[in-house]
Image (tube, rainbow, N blue to C red; front, side, top):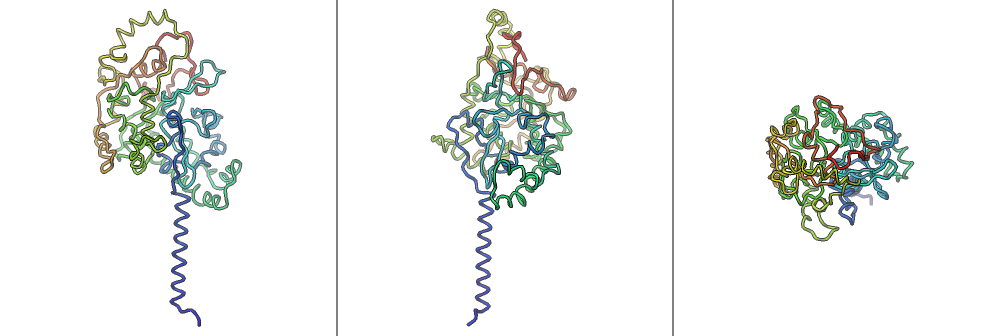
Amino acid sequence: MRPSWRFWRRLAFALIVVGGTAAAVLVYERFFRQEPAPYFASDEDHFLFGSIGTEGAEGLPYWLWLVLPRVFPDLLPTPGGYASLGFVAKDGRELPIGLSKVTVGFPRVGINCAMCHVASYRARPDEPPTIVAAGASHQTSPQQYFRFLFNAAADPRFNADTLLAEISRNTRLSLLDRLLYRFAIIPASRRALLQQRDSQDSWMRTRPDWGRGRIDPFNPVKFRMLSQPMDATIGNSDMVPVWALARRNGQAYHWDGLNTSLREVVLSSALGDGASKQWVDRDIQHWDDQAPRTRSSLRRITDFMLKAPVPPYPYAIDKALAAAGAPVWTANCAGCHGPGGARTGTIIPQIEVGTDRHRMDMWTTSAATAYNAYGAGHPWKFSNFRHTDGYVAMHASKNHYQFWRPVTSLKNPLRNHRSSPLRRKPQLRVEGAVVRRRENRGRTIR
């Protein structure tokens, strides 16, 4: 007896269900399944290489990220791959400092806090660089990094044939992975980068370039996250060191003191760098975990910044010269920048400081209100964002590395952006490191 039409209909339905389920599982496994982020036993290594949740939403496929400098060397400022953009490396690590790698369907690379908050220096040009975790990243150029990715995506060479051929020099992808890269991952990555270019680089082109060691951290938040009206404000400013923050607990953070809660500063930084609300929801559930492997990633970063030591000045100090300068420091600087100074860590009105208004004016009352409402319904909802009328008097410690940069930068953290967008800092760097002139030791210098 031949099967009835009902049998064939049921069989077809069953095959559709099985095929659809298999396709759904494949899509989930290859594009969305998130593996645990790599664990770093040391809080410092976690700060340098750990995930802050940026890989899923805005991460770049690892194999694409790896080969882009080889395919597009002409789009980099100088030879040297990502090092030409100011990235520094630590021996034995797969990625440069400031980048993390997590598998979300496939391995992806995202940025983390260390992109803006790790310094390096050499006492002599022939020495390897000393890495200073939580220092101000004077050598890194985030804007050049983003623009390199945008320009690569807009180039005709960003195609499956070229990129897969270059990837094959590093790894042998399975047949399925090659098909996924050819027809899904590479085209989707190109579209995503071009969309980011259109939404981000369009407004950046109307403003002065950031330059190395500098960033506009909050205009992207205003325009992309908070949907604030486009304006002409300029938020370019020096990176800030984030070490020894325990002494600043409860004081103002960022150049203009726009928030007084370190937890909100850390969480909002992850969101601003590309983490999703859902990732932050999951991470904050483990904020109070005591086990290092399950503890919140952002909590570990917060804890590290609270206790990160301020490194000593690497040269010998001319004690006689320092003693001669001590009364000058006490009379003119200590009240705003010394430990226990009456105004240390407070916001000094811009009209008194006398520097330009750009960074202060960039963060508006409307933006602060919108950010405080951004996390409505989430356990981490913000409440401490605000607009201020000045800049924070940063802490300083004699004979310490931090005395080289933020105190002097405070007098003008923007440094004439509008009048001289290409103005550069004194060229005392060797391959992304700082070499300080020995004849200046014992004095506050830049």
